[in-house]
Image 1 (cartoon, protein in one colour):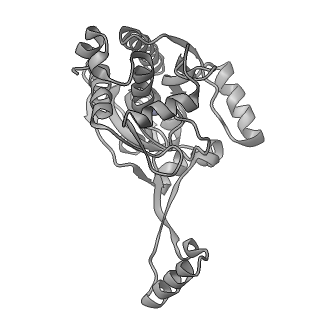
Image 2 (tube, rainbow, N blue to C red):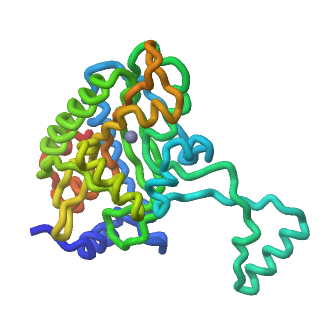
Length: 298
Ligand code: ZN
């Protein structure tokens, strides 16, 4: 029987794997936790059959690029903006005085030109702007931020996603997603997790969002790899997305015939997968099945 989400949260903290920060969804992590996570990430990378360019981006993205992803229209409730102080000495004194008095000191801050990265592959697309003479594949690991307010050990505000991304022809994009969904399922089953694939149900915001959500479902653009980790409903621990020409159009990525490039990505949630493994095999990796330990280099 799977534990409840609250039970799992307590176990993770008691075992020292998750160090609560006081804010739901934001945790420190143990060395053992990080060793599992690194093993998962490397096992995922090891499944590549074709060469991919390995790239790495910071956890923040310029606001202009962020707007081109249409995240503002789709998921405003999950977005995170960075605000900074850029005032004078006088403004600084006023801000400190406001804080000391228990007031709204944040009002002295101003929006910076940066947003938090909400999805692994988003920072990649600006670098592809222009002509794409041939398909390109990328392997990237990203620190993501989503303003999740629910207290749930599987719903994190900051987390890492390892993705394999494709940019090129329409058929190639769908093939890439299918290939990697299959690989993800095999990898996770090989690690002892019970998983199934289903069409995704993303939390698009508001009335307009309901239309986006039904379009996503009808066109089967996104699939999730689900596993029952805790509680009664399964959790998505990996996914495969076909974006069609959405990013190609918005970022001006064009194929040789002038049409917009198609993109797709498949990604694994590294913290969620690590927690799924801890829930499945126990809190001490020394007691895990030898095969799983070997696969993860533990
Ligand atoms: Zn992606």
